[in-house]
Amino acid sequence: MFKAFILPLRRVRAFVVRDFQLAISYRLEFFLRILTILFVVTTFYFISQIFIGSGTRFSEWRDPLAAWITGLAVLNYFMTGFSSLANAIRSEQMQGTLESVLLSPISVPTVVVASSAWDFVLVTFHSSLYLFFGWLFFDVHFRGSFLLALIFLVLTTLVLACLGILSASFAMVFKRGDPFGILLGTGSALFSGVFFPTQLLGSGFHAVSRMLPPTYGLDGIRRVLIEGQGLAEVSEPLVTLLIFLAVLLPFSLWVFARAVRRAKREGSLIQY
Image (cartoon, rainbow, N blue to C red):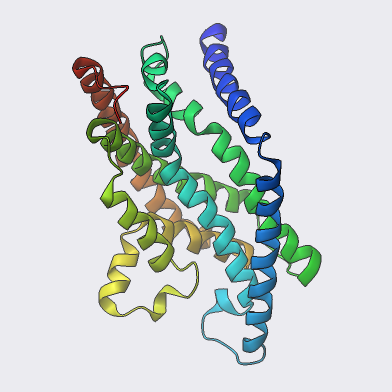
């Protein structure tokens, strides 16, 4: 049993080491990304000064800079959770290594986790920089339970990862990017409250917002970190995310496994 637990971890580690060695070969890109995050935080700080003293009826947006940098940090996770596996599949296809990976004795869940592991390591660092720069340079402070906020972040990322698995299945079978995935990714950024309160949306678009998992994740994280709310007060979005995950996780893994079997049967793993 112990070996069965350790072996997948070693396989995940091998993927992370491989991707890390590739990433450090582009040092300039790494530092430019850090400078870009600092530039974005600084820009939103000066924009937030426009609204100082104007007041708002939305409690999560009384400190616009805190709301924006929280939204941007979390959006990084959301987009990574959604697109990481699909991008990894496309990269393996173009490099001609997907066939050797999927024909090896590695279970489907291990392939899913290992292919996305480095992306989540990197996005954790980048997302934390939004909050760090906000605290260091612009005196942004957060309150509430960071553990509860982390639970929301993990749940929402897992839900979007399930949608990402479905997108990767589409890419594996049809050798194209998933058009539905593109719409979902941009729609999440626009309608989930990253840049403005979802209450400002009209009734039709607000209904769209309520169907997107990131809406509940970001709402819960802001209510915890900015308003200091506890578990009882954020139970509704938390339960909603659990329902999303319970439905999407087994379904997405089932679809991905079928996509792998079809690609193996057709001998199309190296096509792109």
